[in-house]
Amino acid sequence: MRKKLFIVTLLAAALTSAVPAAAAMPASGELDDSQVASITQNCAQAQATLRNLQKRDTVLRINRGRLYDMTLRQTGAFVARLNAHKVEAPRVKELDSAIRSEYQKFILSYDRYGDSLNAVIILDCKQKPHEFYEGLAQVADDRRAVADNVATIKQKIGEYSSELTALRDQEFPEKGAQ
Image 1 (cartoon, rainbow, N blue to C red):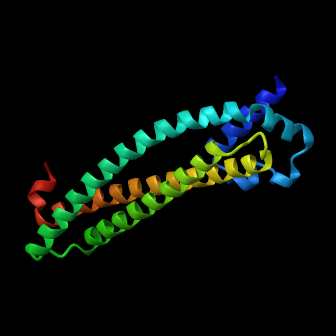
Image 2 (cartoon, rainbow, N blue to C red):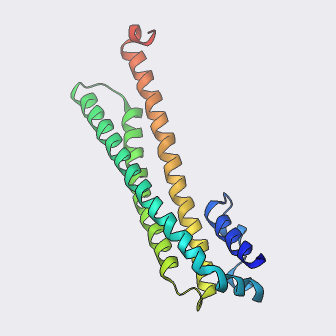
Image 3 (cartoon, rainbow, N blue to C red):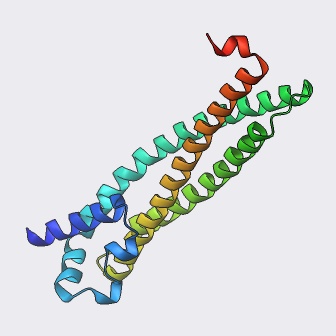
């Protein structure tokens, strides 16, 4: 029971901790024999949990990607209208560019995360417990990178919204009071 608890705790810490995986988990070479045995005994169950996570994350990635795509089409159309009407709004244009750039980073980060997650899922963890452990640490790091991209995009979209409000108040002061 303690061994199962160890591997489940290890998996939960690796995937949810806000602390970098390198600090949260010992290096693979520092695992003692009981930890290696626990990983070997329970890794198939952990892989099943990771497969379920992979299914949920795929749906979330698709939905988030669609949302970002729709948002970028709207911001791009608005920037095009600003340009067509020769309205100076450099911060709005800068934020549109920053959101697009961060979205590209999100795609790359998610691809890296998906690849590392898949590698851990298909790994023969009973024969390679150290590699499985290192793979979990990589998955956790990659998942945090995706979360960081999402947080940055959310922040930039909030700034974009604030800039639109300021632009509205500047261009149409009578509308700002409503």
